Each structure stands twice: as structure tokens, then as C-alpha cells.
Image (cartoon, rainbow, N blue to C red; front, side, top):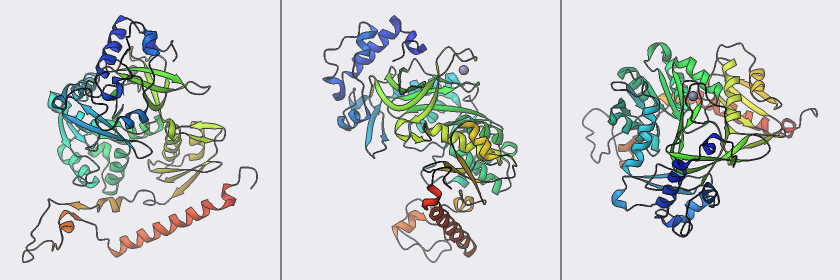
Length: 460
Ligand SMILES: [Zn+2]
């Protein structure tokens, strides 16, 4: 750990007390009972001598292993899925959820205020979906629960809701405003002009500057980054200057250097969780600490680069999802687009962009974000990467029915499945477009896979 880091430099009696209390709470769980049995935290050194808790430890602890309070005190269960498909279990009390919700509202009183409408597109299984509901219940606005994974609110319906209710806040994953803006454009709407959205509250995936700037411009809205995890709950949100400030009252963060650069792995001890407290939990996220923020908030700022497991080694460099998405977004923006897809090849990044009307130099824009990395930009036709028409016809979901009256007008249902979901029946024209897109994508995949295309630069 870097003792000069602000979150550590603050270590005084208050912090020591908070850490000792966290250790005490954690001792009540199966996971920590033995591990922390004879531990007393009197000095910071005592705390730093405690072993790290890994994701593997959480998995081994089992579904109830992290729970430190009786079930009667729990109100919420959450899971995170690891890259290997395994899951970690988290149990939260009402106070746990409230602490995160209140911290978000306190940091953004202008965004989450009485009377302001929040289109809540976070998936139902993800904790932020519930925090948004709580923020609204506490007086921080009017939440429209419209999770984007359950099909009862497909993208076109979400756009209609944002339009008809006059929603001011769109909360969800970073891709959400990209898709909704494309969908709106296909319907002749301009999201900046025709919607009332003035704040995008986004988390759950990399949100680098190029993407933030693009979204802010297209939506005419402020972008706020939300950072946290299922295991730790809220860790921070970004201020008006774009700095992601840590919620130091809820979590104690340590930065463990990885490699020679200023990158570090984030290790978290939860100060604000009773349900499933964690001591020195290795999040697996790689971050970079920042200088003090000029907004006046003394809490340290972080840049979240992404999971260490998702890092890409290319051209002698270590790239994180943050870097790759930043370059892809910059390339797309140069062509007045936000729709892109990045393919990592042996010798380069291939950025495929659904080009808009922009006349910039996309390769140069991308390379400015990633000096020394070879980047090829491929412009593709509208609809090749994101099929807005297909989205508009995504499956309709109905209340389950067990009886269908064929004598009436409407759907002639024969099975329980048909009663639940209606899959789109493409028209001949849509079928033709789908076929063309599939064939062209398959041809591109074949060409990219040829050895010639994989040859290092200079051997062509
Ligand atoms: Zn700030």
C-alpha cells in the first residue's frame, strides 16, 4: 500500500475506530469467524497485517457464508457473477441500502430532488436499481422502474416513457443512452431537443472521457459516473468536474500497486455494511489515484480502469477496458457516431464504427488516446452494429395467460410460452436486411481470421 495516498494519510483515531468496528462486525460471519478470531486492531499496522479477502474466498464461503446478521435483520439478497461463472452472495440490511442511497443523494442534491423524474433502467438484479427506488422514496424524485433486462420494458418503451413523462434523469448502464439516442434518431427525435433529460447517472461498465463527452453533447446533459460493486455497495460518484470521489465514510480503500506504473488494485474494507461486511476485500479492479480535485471535495479521486482479469496486453502495453472504450469512442466521435465495436487482434485494435456525418480522422482521434498502439478503423453501414429496427420489434411480454378466446379479435394463443412472450415476426424486408448483415459480418470475420491479416506491422 502507498502510505502517501490520501485515504491512508487520513488515518487517525476516527479511521482506526471505524476499521476496528468493521473487523468486529465481520467476525460474526462464517467467512471471518476463524480468520479474525484473535485479531485486535489497535494500530494501523495491525489492520494492514490482516490477510486480503479474495473473490475465491467469498465463493468458498457459500451462499450464507458472508452473512454477519440473522436473516430477520436482512431485507435484500444480491449476487455478483464472476468471470468464471461463479457467484458471490451478499446480504444487506435496510440500513445498508439506505446508507448508499443517502450518500448518492447527498452528493447530488440537484439531480435527485423532489419532483424530478428518474427513468430507472438499471437491471432489477443489480443493487443500483434498488438504490434509485430508495432515493425516490426518501424524497429524491419520482422513480420509474424500467429495468432494461426484463423484457416488460423494451428499449422503445423506455424511450416512450422518457418522452411522455418528461423524465429529467436517465439512470442505467453506459450503453443505455447510446441505444436510446440511436432509437430516438431513427424516429426523428433529437434527445437533447425533444427530451427533458438533463442528467445521465451511469455505472456498471467503463465510462472513459471520450464516451462521457460524447454522451454529454448528444444528450445536452451532465454525465455522472457511479462506481461500486455488489459486494461493497456504493464506492463513489463523480463530481461536476468529472472526478470520481470515494465515499470514504462507507468504505476504506487501499491502493495496492500493480506493475511499474501508477496503476493499483483496489482493496476495500466496508465501513457501512452490517449484512455482509468485508475486510480488505480485493475487488480485482485496477484504478489510478488522482490529484486533489479543484471542486473542493477533499475526498480522494479515482479513475476506474476495469477488472485486472479483463486487461489486454498489446504492443508491449497493458490496456484496460477504460483505455479501449476511450479509444473506440474517440474514433466513433470523429465520425459523429457513438456506435462502435472494438476487436482486439494480434497486432492492433480494429474499431468498427457505424459512421455518421462527421468528417474527422477517426484513427488519429483513437491513437491520440492510445499512443503507440496500432488502430485500424473500419466504417460500416448504419444498422450493421446496432440494429435499431430489430430493437423496436424486441419480444413483447404479457401477463401469463392460461385461456385464450379465439372468437375475439387478437392473438390466437395455443401454448403457455406463446401466452408469455411474442417473438417478433420479421417482414420480408427486415429478413432481407438481417440476412445481408449476417452475411457481411461473416465475410468480415473470415477476412479478419486469415493469417495475412494477423501478420505484424512491416511484414505486409
Ligand atoms: Zn471533485
